[in-house]
Amino acid sequence: MIKFQDLGTLAAARAHVSSMRWRMAVGTLFALGASFVLDSFAAGFSWFLAVMLSTGFDAMLGHSYLDVRGTRERSTSGVLFVWGCAFSVMITAGMTLYLAAAGGGPGRVLGALMAASAFVSAMLFLFRSPAFMMISAAPAAVCLLVMPFLPFLPGPADALMGALGAGCGVAGFFAYVLRAAYYNTNMVNGLRLANAQAKERQTEAEVKRAEAEAANRAKSEFLAVMTHELRTPLNAVIGYAEIIEEDMNAEGRAELAGDAVRITNSARHLLKLIDQILSMASIDAGQAEFSPRDVDVRKLIDHAVKAVQDDANIGGNRISVRVAPDAERAFSDPDKLAICIAALLSNAVKFTSNGLIAVTVERTQQENRAWLSLAVSDTGIGIAAEDMARVFAPFTQIDGSATRAKGGIGLGLSIVQRMARALGGELTVTSEIGVGSTFTLLTPQLLAPVELASELERVAA
Image (cartoon, rainbow, N blue to C red; front, side, top):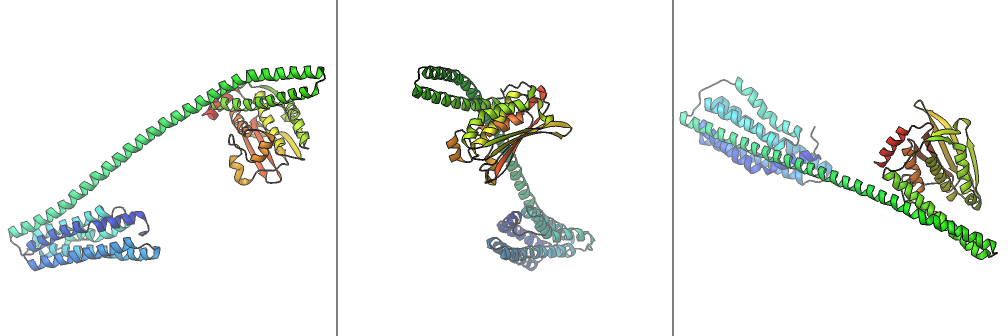
């Protein structure tokens, strides 16, 4: 079935209409050949008029089909156009059979060349629409099949006139063959050019990707080095501020001691942000070091809870911890697990007020392997469904006002997700606005050093 809205059908119709003058010229050559073979100028002129009228008629219908824009109107015009083309080919087929039957040997040759030319014409101009091409080529194909069964009778023309008529047929047929060769050459050259351009674009894309990866790795290495360098003077600031605080308290100068405490707290906050950037840069650069060993999971959680307890109390939050007996021990990297737990707890405390934060650790069995499922649930503000895709993006803050009030640069959850993947696990979230969120960290309970190396390479890549 022909789809008249299809771009291929429209392209075929456009090619057919644009070839009208060409088809008329070759048709005139065949009409001249028919007048020679039949030894009748009237027959040739009649064939010439039939070719001109039928070709002009289907070209007019083609213009109508191409100019119409409505779906229903275009389909109607398309049907008329197809029938017009089929009618034009049937006229050619009728003349072809008449020449083969009444023109003798030269007529048989001229008729065969005309039918073959009509067949080539359909394939040449309508190949973009196979169904349209088959309909237009069918009458010519039928002529070629029927022609051998026609009785072979002597023609009215003498040898010279018959040779001239057959020569016109040969010239017309070769005109179509040469045009088909020209089209084919242009198509092949176009495909070669497109292929060469595609290869060039692919090469450029690969080069740019390699440059981007190198730049990203260089950036991560730079951040890793710089954050290491920043930590040394910052630790010195914290140490001297604590000394000043002790001295001021000893001298009873409480106001200056309070200033020293604020310096210490600000420096520790800045150190925490630098540690986050260092962790992110180390993973991106593939330089994060993993040291799997026996881990007391409950102890890690207790330390993380103690670190955020003051902020939780300020926000009126309660923290509950439940660790299943078979999930209290693990063989993993304690430092990386501690970073993940601390970040999840800090995020829950940050976005929860006068609520409950529950930490639950259980052991699950998946694919014949033991996994730790560590879930941190809160009764905070929750996350909208449209924001779920952005929650793990680095330097992204879903609730900017709340985050600014509490501090942070939007790296915590992104670091946890990358750490989880580097440990061979995953971080997922479920949430509902106004109800709260649950972040679940899933990691292998027993992790081999080889797995850590491969997973780190995968995350860095």
